[in-house]
Image 1 (cartoon, rainbow, N blue to C red):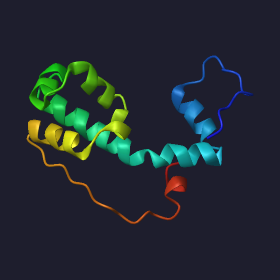
Image 2 (image 1 turned 180 degrees about the vertical axis):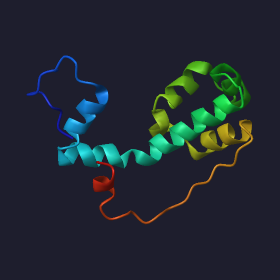
Image 3 (image 1 turned 90 degrees about the horizontal axis):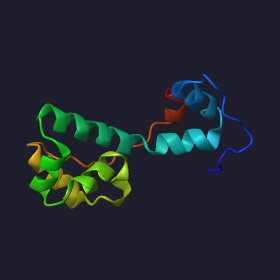
Length: 113
């Protein structure tokens, strides 16, 4: 994906407005939607941890790692997470990890605009 360098920061533009503007770029839109599954998993993991009333530190101890590592994972470091790590997190949160393949929806990127 090409980095945008020609556009200057516009004071007062919200993050949502900036994202909406960048979504006009097909390469950006594709890259954004390619991360949908990771964002969904991230959001569900954080919600489950918060609902359980468990801090990052507590969860990290339960899965045998340190809080900074879990923090990195929760900030979007899923690309380096193993299925085993995700299973440990699910187990520690009394959840079940479900991994499945689904057919891509045609026009899914357009649906998110």
